[in-house]
Length: 287
Image (cartoon, rainbow, N blue to C red):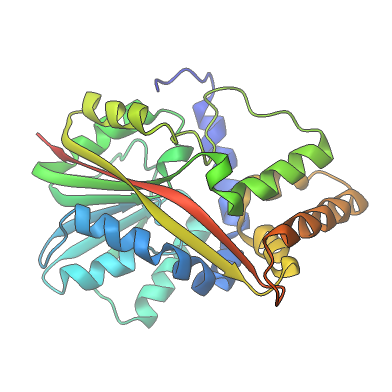
């Protein structure tokens, strides 16, 4: 898990563009996403031992979770700094915070791997489904460790193996098959790259975390139909959308039609789609 990629900055630039492009989709499907992700966020905050008056950093916050939930938990005497490299995601997150009447959090466009310009002294740091996209995980974990107070805790969520995360792997498999796209080179950031929990635990320990624990959490996403699943994917899945984007209109529609057909395998008698996924929540404390 070391930095072997020759052009990590190019990866980050593409990521910024891709995630900005789906920011409105995340806003559109937010209730569906959070219904499935709520238990993951809750467990992260429990393992990080968030309580009133804590200072919290939320890395790769997207459009604001678990930052908003953390802000409620730490109360007016606490503070949350939420960062992301996608400015359009952050604009939505900030608006959601204002609408919720939350004044104890700030949003900042920042590279979550480098964390430049942050002074640290956080009681807890959170990162929900962001670590998998860092080109240099070892560097990121060391930088995160430095931002914590002694005994402060870092809790993150990552995805399990593709066969246990159908809501993501189904679309990626269908798109790659239809477009004859080969798998990414080993080590390339992707949703499943941290599914080896033993290696992940070891990476945390090497970065200076102790009392590292990792556990499985079920994440269920429900949608009213196979067509809705495809719409959901088109709107929020930056890696999948990026694969399809350069194709002709006819090819794109053929890909999305194939995805709808594949999604029917998860349909109940009423046609609704329910996909049960596995995530891992990992937490460690600074020495």
